[in-house]
Image (cartoon, each protein chain N blue to C red):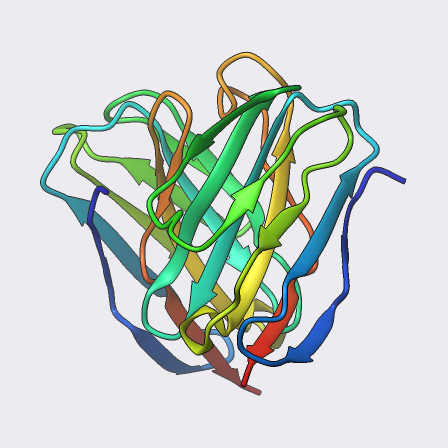
Length: 109
Length: 116
């Protein structure tokens, strides 16, 4: 299957800080997705990107679809304790979804 | 409430003893899928189904079977489980057509399997 390189693997930050994580691929994809997984639960879709260069916001979250269609980043502004979790990028093929290995985010109050 | 329900949530069993993890969704979704999540590897797709009686292999199908006899259910079957199938499993569903076009995948809460 496809390989996605997601970084960083983990982050430990103070409440109020901004966070940035990214995902790259050696192949071109037409849909990039960002999911969050809270402890003990399944992933939940945060943002979906369908157009190269697209910048989309969802509250304090902002994600961009790279112009080359081989990368995407997710920013979280003014982090709060409930932002703790694992964040996954994912790319969509015709009928399958491939996930990155995840970025674990820990936020200290 | 729209949801994907998996059972059991936790299971400890022994090598070779057949088991089935059930998945049911109440949203009339056409697309359903199974993933396994392992530390450092993220989620990897095992099998998926575009509709009733239509199933296909994902990235890691070896050792698993699925069936889709009715729209709401998509059970995952381990005919002869082995320790390397110890993992956290997620079922997901989404509306039909292109599964990800403006239609998010809804995930269940997971099933943690331990094969001794």
